[in-house]
Image (cartoon, rainbow, N blue to C red; front, side, top):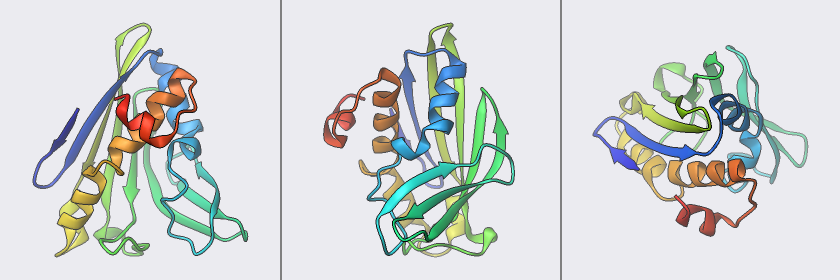
Length: 170
């Protein structure tokens, strides 16, 4: 399910996993969920790490050892909630000014003991300035949050489908 408000993008997916596993797969394996071609470095990304603590970062590590810290962990509440900043500008470059970044909240809601609904809300997009709609449209696009959630759902299922097949499985 996809929803785009003027100032937020909201999406969800339901996975067949207990809430603790759903949270752990998302946070421990974020580097497998994030497409490697989503890259602000000048070299290929060899690893993406979500540091599991408030004050941590989401870090892309390049083939040459360079790093790009493109998000800050703002809340880490296992197994219910994760909030991180989106430190990427409308020009798809690193945004150094925290006042000009948006937030992504990921909520994990147990529907049954073996099924979890995962809701993503990308909000405060207007903080990106005059071109904030470009960020909204980019993260709402099929290659944005829908792709991440499809890859996540596939990972939870234990599959390794191609990105196009994973998008169609939502």
